Image (cartoon, rainbow, N blue to C red; front, side):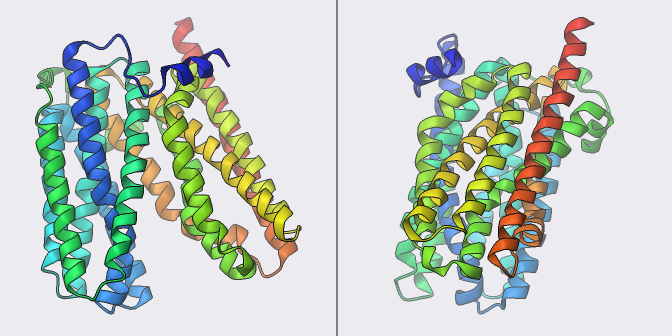
Length: 421
């Protein structure tokens, strides 16, 4: 509780112990993150609609396209982090952002589905690479607690930017096609380039000693069994990121149509809480031991959230809507804890000379969990009757609670052994 109160008092301020160069670096990253998020928010809002309405591609082909782009994103995370260990993370981050801008720009001239799939894959690969290399840059520059707080700041700023970008993209949907789509993708490319220019203002990071990095491949990180268990657990937990964006709309359309209005409310509540609370709550997971407990608490909160969703199906109108909104709040708190704990542990497990490779694998695990989530969530929760739906929610929550508890045990054993050695 003391840590949380300290985090609330600190607000969005940068850590006090940052040097002038570190402070300039973080400010440049935050400026870059906000600009990139504006573009990403527009891309998320328009991409699927562009494929179906703009290019007249059927839903099954769109699903395949999204899967292919996701696979490229997994590869981009692994390769980007690995390369950042051998080269300057700033150079690799800038290069990856250039790749994202090229992908957005290609969509301006897109005339068929194949070109769109290639452009989407380019965007996904370089976007995940950029995320891994930026995380590497932070980890190489700052101690773990400060790095976690800066990641929290970047996520809060990023969520705000994504919300604004998505709102601006909504304008495109009410204007005549095809010019608005092309103009929107061009604006995304320009925003990405603007973010690169802001990032170039950051001081040059310390040169990498290639002799310390050693040989190996991006997959060699999996030889660290403790970290592999952690990544697999995070991959399992990460499926909850799609509860809000994917599962709830599908669930509402399958049997509770009268609650359609609650979906936008849920997204707004989630965004506001992430922007306001991600940084303070990161103080609850700024060490490995606290992060293990945070993951266990997140698993419990996820079970509580799914129990509230289940109960909301059994109540009418206003009481059911109140439980639904309460479930969204609890779900968001679990999201904040999981994010902060994941950042801290992804740095704590990594040797100082291999932060990039570990960040790449951590990003790979998170993206993999999100990638398979639609199939898993649908199979567990979407049922033909209300009673079965409630049971599905409870099964899902139980799986999350068990995963969080197992991660707590694994993390505690790993870092307790480190302290004793």
